Image 1 (cartoon, one colour):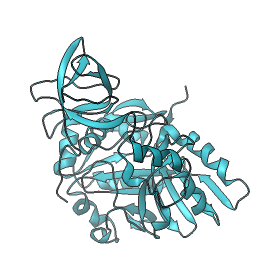
Image 2 (cartoon, rainbow, N blue to C red; image 1 turned 180 degrees about the vertical axis):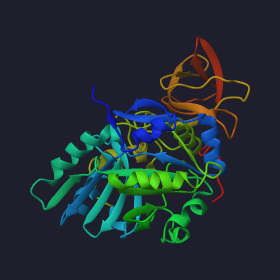
Image 3 (tube, rainbow, N blue to C red; image 1 turned 90 degrees about the vertical axis):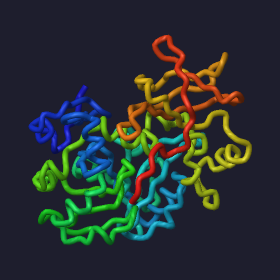
Image 4 (tube, rainbow, N blue to C red; image 1 turned 90 degrees about the horizontal axis):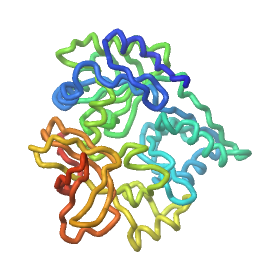
Length: 363
């Protein structure tokens, strides 16, 4: 198998990161301790290399209409300089991918997609852009993406740019100079729930920016890996593609109704309307274990009530902030007595439902 490397691969190795194969890329799992990295992001700031993510430019006279039809959110509400969380669905309403869309120009969009879905997304979109004045350009291997997350992220990096970061609202972006590099996209986005920014830059400059940010000092910002990124997103209840959402789940089933805009036309709209009106066979839920239970829920663990299987776990991890294990799951049957047990290691562990997010972050 040909495993790809991000431009910063050597940087991660030099920092003694534990590298793993993630979505076909060598990626840092952790540098020191995933718990330490998690806590640092919540209290200070951390930097993630997420350059494995897919990056598409969709442009042309019909670009907006194509993406509007293939996704559930309303991209026509996007102004230049704004971003939007969205999902692309198939003919059955299943989620092909969840993605963030940036409006660069009136007829030019930047799509940030999950690495595992790059080819699938590309082929799906290309089916709808043939001969209609729309172009898809895959720039995934040319550009890098860094994520600076944590309450001190703005304070720590504002000295490196002329852009007034404090004036960039949530899910908006500016294009300007960072670390002496021009035409860098800096967005007020991220997938940890903490305050943060994401930096979109050409590969040939990412090493400069990475090093300049780390030179701020390890007492202020530390490199972080995929392990802490997973526990951070789970504390907020953010979905992970391949675990909590997939082509076998719809936005309605997975609790993403807020990004489904029924006033517009989109693919498989009738299916989602029906689910919204009469309910679904399964629904995403969230839960926690008692603090004295140190068993991490794993994807695929079965959930039961007193006698019957009623669901399954999709994500689980230890929350360093709550100091207990948490998870996401799908419930496939009514749970009338409100008792749910996790089956693991031939044990029956009680779990308790909790409304998302697991933690509240003051911004």
